Length: 422
Image 1 (cartoon, helix red, strand yellow):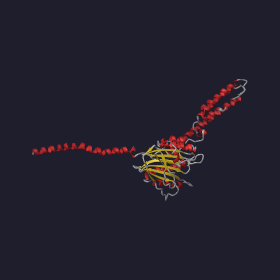
Image 2 (cartoon, helix red, strand yellow):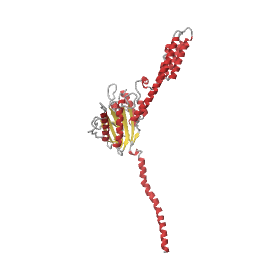
Image 3 (cartoon, one colour):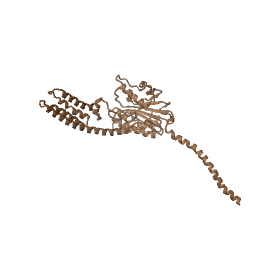
Image 4 (cartoon, one colour):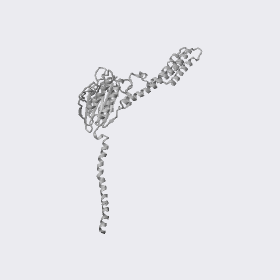
């Protein structure tokens, strides 16, 4: 659930079956079949009706329908078929229909022109959409399934139609001080918040490499937003954030919250809400005296996982106005899902959220972090190879030692012979 294809699927606009008319995507199957079906039905009805009944006006509806679903060539063929059907009944001298034939022909030609314009517009939309998609994925690329010793699974759904990135963010990076994760929610949502999301993610990725403590990472994120506020007129940028650090070689995890919803500890199929010091949101203009809250220290046991989310999850409501409570809804999921793969879990939570709240109008981000045991780390293999080198050295010395003794005796034999000759 962490790939770009999945995020693209969640970015599809909503609005029912007519949504294809607004997004430039391919028409549904029924829209492509309707013109053909209409031609067949009208042809059959025309053959069965009395000669004094004209159906030419109905044939004129076929080319415009074809223009909505087909290109100019297919639309021209549909228009020609409609004209032929209009001409055949008028072959008899006692049956008028010349005006209908002229009208169907005119509508067919106009529909071909409309189809040509629509096809070019769709091609432009596809090109612009591809560029926009690449830019948005550059801001927040798909999440890796594993970062260091931590397995990751995330789900991102932007509230604004047709976008891949909104006002929520998450990222997981490995640095000199362990694996660190960020889940955040900036002010506003949609494309207006993408610039702030990009700034925060850039500051986080840099801080992962430079800052030895989570407090320093939080301070750098706060300074980034304060600086952007100073540059923009009447800007009021702020964000909530949750920082997680997996200590290398230790089961301890550090959790630091900057006004963000509390994460969940998933252990043995049950969920418990953690209570880190909430702190203050980032970017409130306290850069000179900003004091990040103290991190929450938590010792994890094998199989433990952390679930972080944004307020798009915890503030979703059903038709009766009841809030979605993640810790309670998690308990309703099947046991094999609660204890199963992290990617399956985030997918199940998203479906449960949609079933509970219906249409979710806010950005949504879910992130599951599952640390593995130290012995499962792939980076342990090089250390084992290095550890074998000292064992080979004595063996090499033992092989060389017998070779040195004969060499010494060969050097001493000429000296003994010289002494006997004297």
